[in-house]
Image 1 (cartoon, one colour):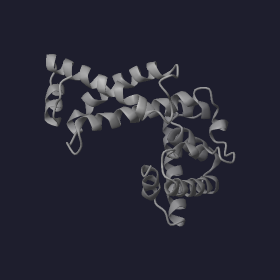
Image 2: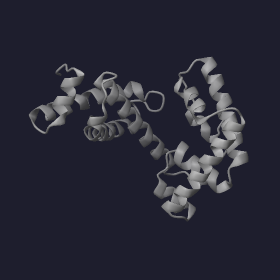
Image 3: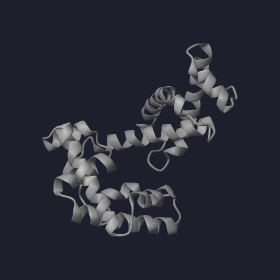
Image 4: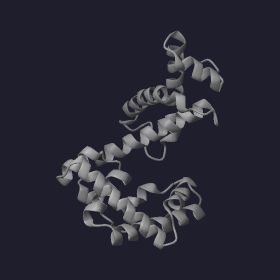
Length: 212
């Protein structure tokens, strides 16, 4: 495999031709090599779904990289940037797979210790970070329960936390995509207000989970 600088990666991938084909092959190998570790908290290589998921993620990642090549700013290694794209795609696909046989009612259940926001917790974080995340989850659950309507809760949890596609949520809720957008917009405004009343902002919440 050819070692490349950031500039060489961008140059090789930028124009169709032999150099691009070779670079795409090398990049695919790098993505596939990194996925077992990146996904170890959610899926192991021994899982029957792992191989097919990895191939799908690698292909989608290469397409996304080619589409987004102009956005790479060189602040990190090119392969690190690509790896982050691959992980985001993989986690989105894992969330999509999880909802396929699950009803909206099950998604919005708040059983003790099994609330829908539990998916956000960083399992590899230290005890102090986990405690902060747990407090955030508890506060978020209170805001969602007290400030949002039942339909707003259903839509927000299904789309933003569990990754269910908009079209599927709209179908299950008996509405259309535009109405669902409006519902989610109103839900986010109420959520933001509820967080601010507790002295938090959406940025505070995201920072707590990124700490993991």
